[in-house]
Image (cartoon, rainbow over all chains, first blue to last red; front, side, top):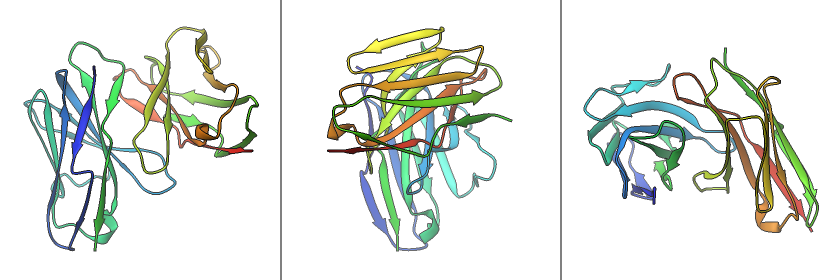
Length: 116
Length: 109
């Protein structure tokens, strides 16, 4: 159990367009999901914490109007990169925490975004 | 502030043993995690320590000393496929993961 999926696995888009990334917990309920960004040869950087049914909590320096997060159900959170620019090109990874447990996070496989 | 320190890069030989250290200073402690991450892939869970001592799982072991703010990941009988980055992460009092920058492990034949 504890499988998290992300869709799409990779996406290439033109500058100025918006891209939506989905994160799903397939076999468990996740009250909380986390969105990370990772640039090459760097560690994970937490962008925001997404709680089902409420507004996401964004980390300092992350623009909430540019990175829209929606966590409408206990198994789905979406991250929309609006008006994407080449500097938004990165590896976006989500993780989910079981409703009943506070420790382990289960990671999705990641989404590689390239903005031309 | 909160801080996780681990070496940037380590090199070891196939078949040998390597120890990757991690020291931390965080606001609260709800456990320490080690993850393995191959290039271009998401992290995969290796171990979780919340009590002092050694946790062994096959070729991998993880040790924790809460009083010293210290952990290590021990990899035995190294294989070429163990070449990856190893991430140390501490869960703070708010149950948020604080991540180290990762240690890139290079295995040589």
